[in-house]
Image (spheres, rainbow, N blue to C red):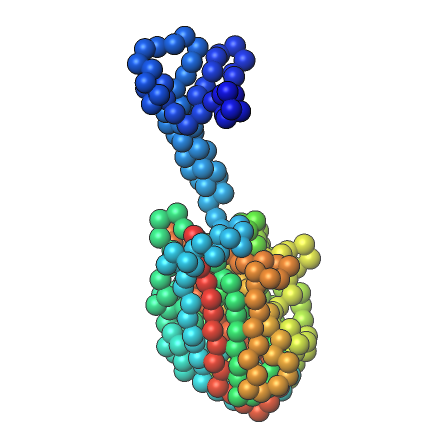
Length: 353
């Protein structure tokens, strides 16, 4: 310390005195004094290592992991928010429906209709994706889903936002034996654990089952590890399923997805569709591999805006997986509670960083 108790610097054991905030020349000392060190060289080295550590830390993390990170990204021009809408389609209460082909944001989606069936991989550029036209991340950034909100002119039990990895058609319900997918595509987006982990199978009716028959339907697939798998042998109910409804094997209309084989927890590829007699006289489906992202209850009330705020939930924010900086095709499934789906208006907040 100085004579009045002011801080002069720090005694460094075995090194000497490091001056605090000044160099010797600042107080008129123009010659070297052994074991007395100027502040400036120390400050430059300190700043260098602070920057180096900060950059190293950022490269290791490489993602937004805190609420402050969200605020910083959105405050620095990396908010990507968008309003979306879908027109009403005809429904029946207590069945799941697919809004992919409904008029609205992203355009009218289409399903492949070739026979034998083929499939294709989808992403944010695909017609029908709710996020079509929203800027994908760049550089080392990733994209994060923050909120999902919606309101509908009709009551809904549930809505589910999905990333539609792959869709294929036309898998017919009026033929036997199996129809094999021509040159099948494989899931590439990774939501954690590997591409296809957590992905599910669903079938959207594209040709109405006007005169349905009973019998079973099995979907053959490659599981999350690329091994052959098949859905359990479940009865396909003799239900006159209209276009846009999701098929409910085993009569379980409350769940949109096919059960997988024991031990399987994901899907990478659609291999074939095996419809057993008795056969439908009509009926065709598009089979999709999808990633469930956000479930949202609509409080069973029309014209009420409901929103899931993911950062405040236990699950936290959701990374929208990308391949070569292109994110997936966002789409909406709805568990209906009325004769029509009602016009749906929604809002999604995202950020990148």
